Every structure is written in C-alpha cells, then in structure tokens.
Image (cartoon, rainbow, N blue to C red; front, side):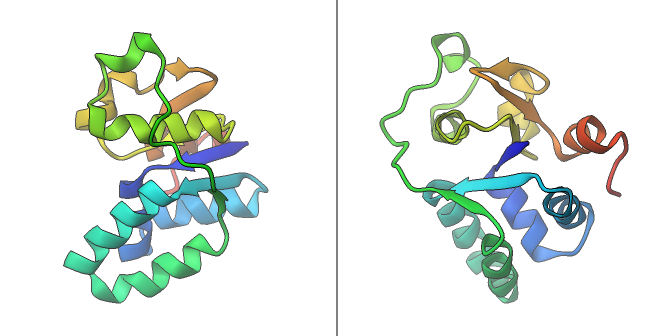
Length: 142
C-alpha cells in the first residue's frame, strides 16, 4: 500500500515516539510505502523548528525511509466534488497523494479533513492514524 503523509503526521512522528511514530514504523516494517512531497516536508520542518527544534533530526531520519514526490503539485487541482469540503491550503496535500498514486492519505487534521475522512477521492482514501491502523492491521498502534 502507498500511504501519503500529511505534515501533521510528520510533525507528530518526529516530536515523540508515540502512537503515530509507531504506526509509521509498523507500516514500513510491513512493506508499505510512505510518501511525502516538498509541501508537507516544509510545513512539518517549519513547525518543528518553531516548537521542537531537537525533533528536526528525527524528522530527517524518518524522511530517509520515505518516498518523495518530485513533481510540483502546486498547480494540480483536486476533483470538483471535494473542493467545497477542503480548504484551499490543504488541497495540495490531497493533490499530491493522488499524483503519487497513493491508496491512502493519513492526516491528524480532523478540522480540515474531517468531512473527507473515510471517503475515497480519485483512488485515495482519507484516514486518521487510528482508522488507517485499523484498516491495515485491524488494531490501533497505541
């Protein structure tokens, strides 16, 4: 399975070795591909630099085990049926997941992605960390 990670997932996995960090390890160990792009990396890096500078080394270590989408997603559009459900700022994340051919997008941002959680858009199912863990492993990584 190809799983695209939102910036808040990178942030959470980098700042502590909690459930999100464990989930990414379990996914990698099980042979799933973790995908990111420059947009989510930069957002995670910026937020870590502002709040948890020491976690930047962990972020770099995690990124070493991930696939990176090299093409720019800035001009990619998300499907019309979800435009009204997703703030403009977050559309590049979904567009990148679609472009990378991912099966899932995992995000901790329920406020913005909440209306799409559990839905499949252009082949990408939007998950929280808990719903992804349940879908893939039948349980939570907590």
